[in-house]
Amino acid sequence: MWKGEAEAQKTRADRLQSDMNEIKERLTRIEAENQRLIELLTAIDPSRIPHLHV
Image (cartoon, rainbow, N blue to C red; front, side, top):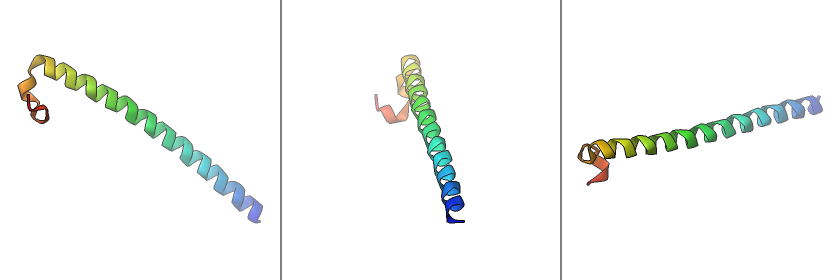
């Protein structure tokens, strides 16, 4: 019985790791997209981006 439980836990851990990897990849893409949007907005009107303090 313990072997079946161990296999189930490993399957769950593998799935969670895969989910975490996907989340990290999505976050990386979102950060890149956000940076590009900031660049575009800055080119249009830098004074409208408060955190840049231009």
